[in-house]
Structure formats: C-alpha cells, structure tokens
Amino acid sequence: MYLVIVLAALVGRYLLSLVADVLNVRNIREELPEEFADCYDAERYRTSQRYLRETTRFGLVAETVGLAAVLLLILAGGFNAIDRMVRFPGYGPIVTGLLFVAVVVLIFRIVHLPFSIYDTFVIEEKYGFNKTTPRTFILDMVKALILAVVIGAPIFAAVLWLFGFAGRFAWLYCWAVVTVIQVLLVFLAPYVILPLFNKFEPLEDGELRTAIEGYAREQEFRMKGVYKMDGSKRSAKTNAFFTGFGKSRRIVLFDTLIEKHTVSELVAVVAHEMGHYKKNHVPWAIARATVNMGVTFFLMSLFINNEGLIRAFRMECASIYASLVFFGFLYAPISMVISVIESAVSRRQEYAADAFAATTTGDPASMISGLKKLSVDNLSNLTPHPLKVFVEYSHPPVLDRVKALRASR
Image (cartoon, rainbow, N blue to C red; front, top):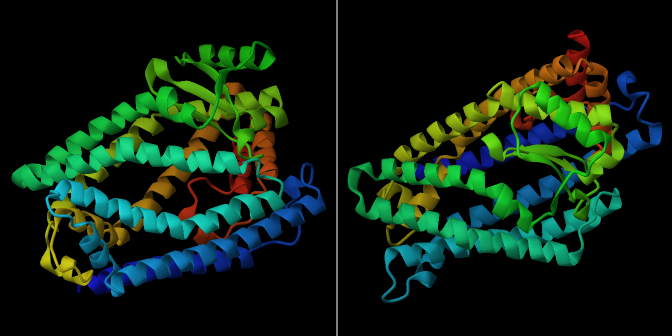
C-alpha cells in the first residue's frame, strides 16, 4: 500500500506538471497584448515565446530524468544499497544517518548537475541572461555544500537524536528546535549567509536613495537601510526583495533593476515589498509555515520505523533516518496541496501589495510601468494557462496585475 501511494504521488505530480506545461505552451498568443505595445517590440516578444518553449521542453526533460532516478532507487533497492554501504562498524545511528542522507543528496545533485550547467551556460546564455562564470558556478556549489554541512547536518542530527531518545513527544521537541533555528537564520541571513554569495553595498547618496528613504519615513517604516546587490554577477534578470525583521530589515535592489528603471518605478517596487510587511503578510506566512512544520513533525512521528514504509523501499533494516527520508515521499501529495494553497494565498497578497504601493505612492502609473518593464527584462510569459497559474504561480500573471491596478485608479 505504501509503495502504491508513493509511486502514485510521484507519477501523479509529474503528470500534473506535464499537463500544465503542455497547456501553458499551447496557450501562447502570437499577437502581442495591447497593454505591452508601448514597451515590447515584435521581435522581443517572439524571443520571449521561444524562451518559454525552450525552457519548458528542457524542464520536462530534467523532470523526466529526475523521476526516473527516484523510481530506479526505489524499485531496484537503491536506498537499501546505500544503507548497506554507509553502515560501518562502530558508527551510531546519527553518524550513519548523516552519511545515508549525504549519499542520497549527492546522487540527486549529480543527476541534476548536467541540467544546471546546460540551463546556465547554454539556455540562459543564448537569451542574454547568463553572467555566471564557471568559477562563480563552482564556488556557489562549494558554498552551498558548506552551508549544508554547517547548518543542515546539525539540524538533521538533532532531529535524529530527539526521535531516538526523547520518547512520544519527540516531534514536539523537534518542532521547537527547528523553529528556533529558523528564526535565528532569518536574523543571521542578511549578515552571514547572503554575503557569501553576493556583495551588498549601501545605496549611494542621490535621488533614488532620497526618494526611497523619504517614502519609508512617510510610511513610518523602520529599516536598516537600502542596499544594492550585484545581481549582475550571475544574471541580467532583475529583482528586489526585503530581508530581516524589525530594525534589521533591509531593502535590497539588484543592480540590474536600478540600471533599467526610473526612480519613480523603483520607489513603486519598494512600496510593493513594503506593503507585504505593512499588511502583515510576512508574519502570517511564517506562522502558517510554523504550524505546517509542527503538523509535519507529528505525522512523521507516526511513521518512524513503520514496517510497511520500510518494506516499500525494499530496505533490509529499519532505521529512524530512513523513515524520515521515506516519509518525505509519502507526504508528497499533502505537500503539493499545501503548496497550491500557499500559492493562491500569495497571489492574493500580491494584489494587495500592488494596491498598497499604488495608493501610498499616489502613482499607480509607475507601478504599472515597473511591472511591465520587469516582464520585458525577464522575458516573462504574458499569457500563462490558468492551470499553470493555479498549480505553480506565486504571483498573478502581469496582465491581471495591471488590470487590477487600472481598475483601482
């Protein structure tokens, strides 16, 4: 029964993604939407369609190979072979568990690596986005590996220890420990983790900084400052985001975003991000994630050393670490449903943040032009299929956002 559920979840998720992608490509409109006539020339629009088709085909190939790798590990007893390989005499369950997970993760990283290389250095290069050098690509992988060892390994070790020795309330202790660590990481990320990958420099004095800081004062928004990030180190795509909480909050603008947008458009983008804080979207998202994590740990506790689940993956020996990994596969259908719900909530919040920006700046036109430029710069799909939006989009399609902003004027 467990094997059937796991296989059905894996194949079902793949087929849903396949159908959504096929419908999405078929939904491409040859004619340029009238709303974009002022900023999208015909050739650039055709390029965006080619980009969508190519990335979709490539994504399906990558997903197919990834699914095949998982099915092979399950049906051919690959997980058991890994378990036998890492069971060294004298090693306890925690060290063995860390080795087991490390090998599993390494296998999937190796499977994914050729696709990551091709995506970065062929597809993104072809469409003028890639700025990543081989050296940066390799360093990013090394840094990510170090972070996984320094942060991920101790967390997993703590979870293994608690489920092994803390009794019936182990799931509750795991929930508390992981929650505390996540909160700490939110505060540490802007100072320790993010600078490992990018440079963050205070935005230089000038019209843009004055405008953003003036707007923040008007909204009584306390923050650490406005920073520019060297996004051009890896890609020509544009973006902006906030990090931290309270006084540690930072506004971060990609250097590519600053280069391609006017001051009023950048203020509108910042206002949108600020709207998420002002409307408490961020705390509520953290609260939902925390509750979800607690429920997940509770359900996980019910499947520790579950004989049926262990047999489904053709394991010879039951173990806590294998149970945790296999539960992730079993939990996939629930995880997908939660993801769809979270995406729907996120889309509603994006509309609210757009409206906040338009109202507080008194300049919805700049919000609209900023969204349109972002779409053009990133070759975004202007006419995604509703199923694709429903299943995967955390932001509403740009035309829907523009329509909502115009309606609010």
